[in-house]
Length: 275
Image 1 (cartoon, helix red, strand yellow):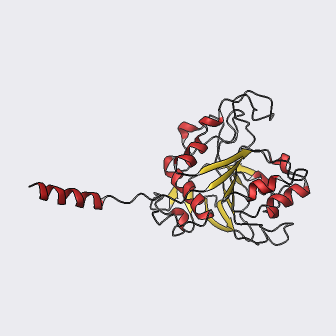
Image 2: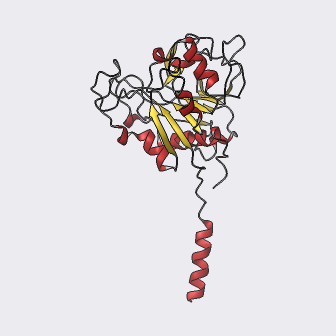
């Protein structure tokens, strides 16, 4: 009887799906602390009035809870006059440029060149504002719009969508209404043509690109001022309007998997392979 029970228990254990985790990465998280407690508001960086301490940041918790290490979190908004910041950025496995940013603070030409070409490690960019032709010139347009429809995977077999619960239309609701303030949303760039980037997902109905990947060395679009110094991924997420929640995590648990897959993919791991 005990032997039979042991066999049944072993079979049950073997039938449990293996957890799909990703190799740990050292990440530099770029943000301006505008939602951080006492360190800034959405309208005036450094003015105080934020509501969220870094230790409570849900993006940090998501990444660290899945084995990653945030080795530095700062603005890095002065690479034109403090190029040593590139050493910190390029020492990481991945740079994540968060939605908690003001694109106007990254607008000097030398600084634009440093971010686009001088950062040679993979980078995930979570705000469309710096992509514009008036900033890092990664696209040839600049109007920003809010996303209202679900995300739709254009290449659902891409590893970034592994184990992501897409519906029959390859769609996923990304934002979590319970995490959004009344004026919060996710930003997209009102541009259908992302040049030499590969569109992996767009907003259903509008077909505005939501996740876009550029290979190292790619001219962002024909005629762009810059080329990609390393792999680049545009993945828009993070609150945008509430002045006290700039860049706060606002995505669903299902979208968490998509974001973690993006981190794995950009650091050279296969999200579909358990580790």
